[in-house]
Length: 294
Image 1: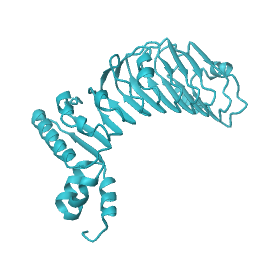
Image 2: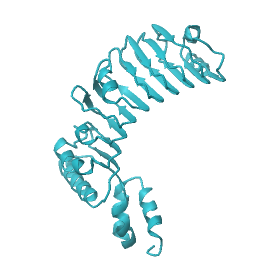
Image 3: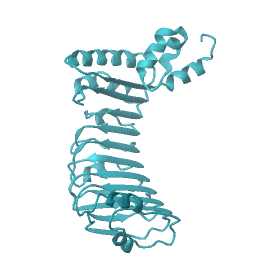
Image 4: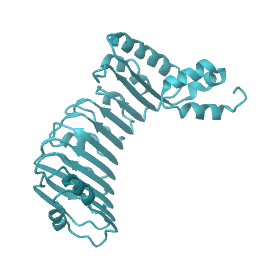
C-alpha cells in the first residue's frame, strides 16, 4: 500500500461513502493517513437506538470536529446524525464551531435545519431534510445552483422568498414539502425541477423560461396547474388516484420530446395541452391504473 502513488491513495479515500471508513483506512495505513489532509469532502453518518443518544451525539460531534480540523480545504460536507425517532440533534452551536472556518471554500452542504446562510456565500449545492425552514430573513445565496428540500416544513406559502433568495437555481427538488398554499416558482435559470407535493394546493404555477425537465407529482386535491416553460423537453405529470385537476394551462411547448401523464383524467389533460406535434415519446401510465382497478 505504501508504494502506491499519493494521487491514487487520495482517489481511493475520496470514493468512500462514509468518512468513518476513511478513519479506518487512516488507522490501518500510514500512507492513507499521510494523504488524508488533502481530502476535500466529509460525509459522516451515524445512527443509534436506545437511551444513550446524548452521549452518542457528543461523541459524533467530537469526531467530526477533529476530522474537519485536519483537512486543508473543505468543499463538501454531509452530516447525518439521527436517533431512533429520526430527530437530528445537530444544533446551531455545533455549526458555529466549524462552518465559519470552511465557508470560503464550501460548495456543497447536506444537513438538517440550521442557520447556515450567513456563512455560505459561495455555496453551489444545498440539501436539507426533515427541517422546519423559514426564508423571511435568509441572506440571498446567488451562487447556489442546486437546492433539494425533503420532508421539510417550508414557511413560504407562495415561494416568493425562495425565488428571491436563490435566484440562480438550475436544479430544484422539493419532495414531501408542507406549508405551501399557492406556490409560484419564478426562476429564470432553472433547468430541472422535481416537485412531489402532499399539501392541498389550490394552484401551482411555474414561470421558468429555460426549464428542460419537469416532474410534478401531486397528492393533494383539485390543484390548478399553470406552466410557462417554452424550452421544456421532458414533462412528467402524475396526479394521485382519481383526483381531478382543477385546471391545467400551459403556454406553447416548442421542444417537448417526452411526455408522461399518470392520471385517471388523461383525456382532460391532453385537451389542455397547447401542442403534441413535437412529442416523440408518450407514456400514459394506463397499465398501472388498469392493474389497480382489477
